[in-house]
Length: 425
Image (cartoon, rainbow, N blue to C red; front, side, top):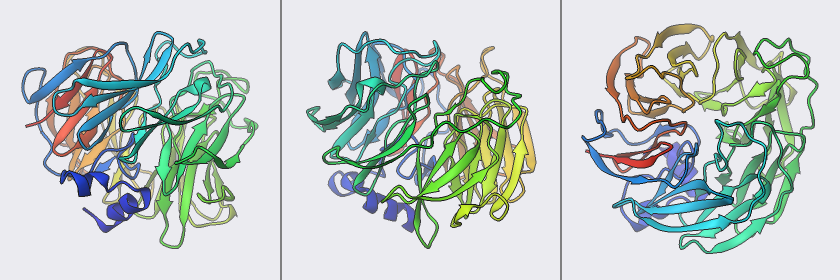
């Protein structure tokens, strides 16, 4: 395990698994321990299908888009069941449900048909589990499913719903409450739910030309990005991708540190950070910007390294390795981009096992392998290298999935609309 990752685990209180069970690093949040999508493990399965290298699969009560998180001998997902919004805890050993807890009798909210309720993934520190259920509020439970606290944050309303789950760092729990008319970045004490600070970016005036197919100035606007905690070497920063700009905050106080313009008004993916560079990606036919952190005020002209205008969409988030960005575009095309310049090195359409090739999932990096999941449930394993090389195609044939991989102790966990799968050698 790298010193940087170990530092993140200590500061976030995530060493419970390492010290108590002797297993490998957990996957405690949507993109792992530090939000990068990079696993410290290098012995994950390379090949599988619906019957080979499957430890178990368990049926889910309804469809859902959230990604499972793994800690110790337990797996947690967020799940809508009727008018209830729940965290469901499963046994890692056999996939049996251990408990479910959450909110019942929740009134319907606007959302897109492709975005079921409870699409925001949970997060855990090994002692507590946290989930955001939109207008039903932010919840904290212990490992046995007992509610520790609940914070009512008021109504969330957006025609496409919500999907940005809570993020833990130190003693705080962070949340992008948005998108919609009420959008704010919130930090609460993770033990009590007491508010530490909030920042309301307000409705940013949309001045960029719209070419994303969702209308002109009054088209769909918003950010589904999760906060990303980084360490620049001199200070910690909390990075958020908002409509038209990426912004940095002091994670302890919420004070705005710097902002960089150049994103489009619709943002799905979460910001990347690696090798001293922040990379923020807009949504359909949007823009990507790369910026050096550590600045102050408007750094668009001083710290922005490049801006790329694209003809493809980014819903999932990528990874950074050895001077390159690796991303799976929403149209099913994998891409390698040079980190310093934004130049595309290769773009390859990945041939799916059926006609469905689109992807909403985020990339996971393990060693020099890239794990990419499409909506068909196919996992493509590629070499993380400036020359394209596909190592494997692993179909599940289990219908639609919009979740991302979770990996822990040599196993891969995949959530489709129908099942939760455990893949292992």
